[in-house]
Every structure is written in C-alpha cells, then in structure tokens.
Image 1 (cartoon, one colour):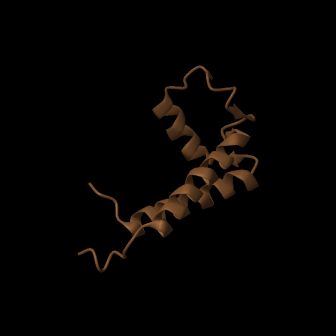
Image 2 (tube, rainbow, N blue to C red; image 1 turned 135 degrees about the vertical axis):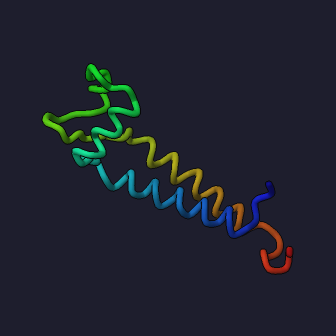
Length: 94
C-alpha cells in the first residue's frame, strides 16, 4: 500500500502532538475498570509490573519514560516535513 501525502501528514501531526502530550504530563492515572482490563491483558496477577505502576488501591498510575515524548515528536516532525516536501497533491494523483 502506497501512502499518500495527506495520510503521511496526518500521521506525522498525530505523532508530534502525542509526543507533546507525553512531554507535558508526568503520569496517567487509570480508572479502576481500565486498570483491571490492562492487568488481565498483561497477565499481571502477582504485581510483576510494579516498576511501571505505582500507587496503591485499585487505581494504577503509569509514568511513561521522559524520552518517549521526544522520540514521538522527532518522528512526527520528520513525517510532517516529508509530507510537505512531497510533489503533487492527492486530488491530482487520482
């Protein structure tokens, strides 16, 4: 499948803004229901993910690594610039 200019632009912008979000927020607190679903999917029966999750009770807190935001912003900006530098528009390529 060949990606077209608007698809690459949208992907780049979404990755860039997700990276900004990860840089602005230190941690995410999950609801009790989402904590239960994630625990069931990852097979966390005995608390093996304590290094990733912190806090007590039923609500878990996820602290993403600081480098993740920069990595997403970098990839998003490269894809955005690539889509801007591409020739032609999607309407003329049909």
